[in-house]
Length: 157
Image (tube, rainbow, N blue to C red; front, side):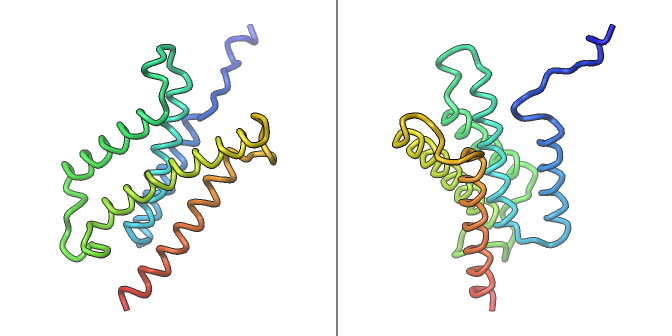
């Protein structure tokens, strides 16, 4: 009888995804710059893509890199179709802030995944420190967000 109340644990729980998505929505409503929000949105897409790829049975569909690129493209298409991009004055160095942030976030995500795998490779397939897979991307995103927050402040003055 108790088995009906036990639910499996997932690597990426739906509550976490909703929480991060909700956090991005709140950040946008609080007036945090589109470029910064879209960097983190792209990071969320990449995390979901690699989680999804790890659950795929077919080898061809189990590439996190492929799913990351697909989610990146589909998210940009969705944002363009819903007219959330292309607003006058919402640019950074002449490029739409959302497109720029999504692209930057995509590159940062893949860089963080690469660095994590490289560190593991150099350490005989083992992590150097606990939660390495979480900490490396988090640090990459915090540093990137900090740098671009400063740049936005400098450029808009």
